[in-house]
Length: 192
Image 1 (cartoon, rainbow, N blue to C red):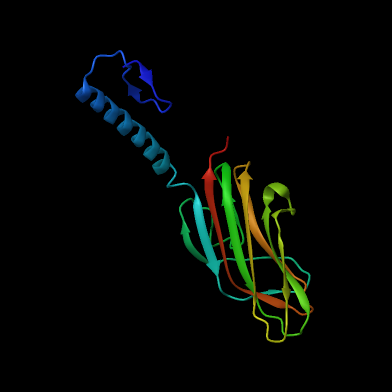
Image 2: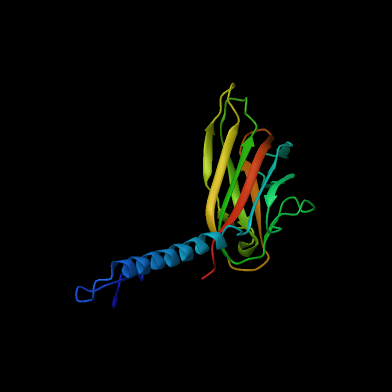
């Protein structure tokens, strides 16, 4: 058997002697080796740093003011990213590419104005500049429902100990509150 497929499976050439049992066993061994290598890649990434936290206590936010959101319940954290004693920070100690997602619900506005609610993902590597900050406008009416804002991004952690926070803001003419909220962060790729 002198030829190989692109995945490394050997196969007989037309001129090789016929030995079906040996050739089939060789193919089965090649496939087993390949599948084991692919499975090892998957299993090695099951324990990547990941955390999810949430909170439901109301957090007051004045109009046009930035407020760093706090978190109270650690749903899971396999890498010590979140510490209850520092309820606004996530400290990332492994370099790599991370998926970050947060959502928060701003209380309803009953004064018939149009307003915008915003969440920003802020990294210590960028100072106070946001990593990602989309806006979602809300057409508020007297019977309006609460405004739920989601923000997600892929962010490369380039400095060990980089911290991530979530900042909320709104432009309602009256103070508002952020009520239920959640945040998750998961490493999805190694630093290359």
